[in-house]
Amino acid sequence: MGVIDKIFAELSGNPLLWYVLKVFEESVAIDRVILVLSETNLDRGSRLVEEGRFSKVAAVCAGGDRRQDSVSKGLTRLTDCGWVVVHDGARPCVTPLLIEKGLEAARETGAAVAAVPVKDTVKMVDRSGTVVSTPPRQDVWIAQTPQVFRFDIIERAYREAREEVTDDAMLVESLGYKVMVYMGSYENLKVTTPEDMAMAESIMQRRNAGRRGV
Image (cartoon, rainbow, N blue to C red; front, top):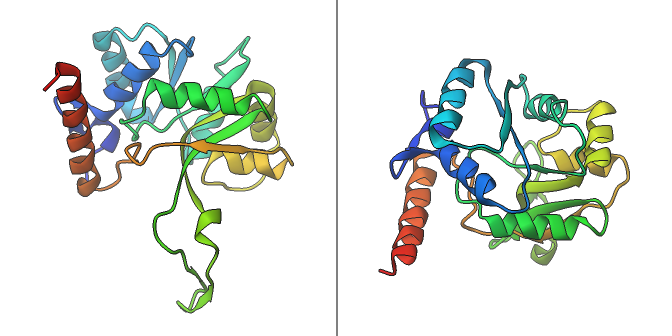
């Protein structure tokens, strides 16, 4: 996205982050929200919360250098909490249903991850670019957020974290917990490139048209 901070990039008149906060605000499954941002975005984020009247946001706090550092800092702001739903601010097309499905799936083992099956064949390659294996396509899913955890599990995972990971479930898996996968949505894309923005714009316009009955 170049010099643009993607979570504040405008999508149909509002920042990406606004859509995420709106969904969590409207979800009956969510009691409170901890918004974790870079140090430079704290004031901007606080204004967005105030202007959007997102009353469930209990705190706006600074994150860390890595994603896992930011989640860890967010967890320290939670008290008397049974379940934690972690979501990327760059996934604006999340829905209340995805949150609710995640909480339901997590009840079995204490941990669940939204994901979608891959549509294409996946090749495992070595550093030279040589194919070393082709995993069965039906066994490969693409992880998304929300990722849902019982508080004691995710708190322990971050307290004992020693490795760098790309999502929260990896830390939970490393402790030996079973993580359930539940069906996410191909529309629940993570905005990383201008092409992703265009796709998200199309999704939002279609949803708005559906609400208006067009």
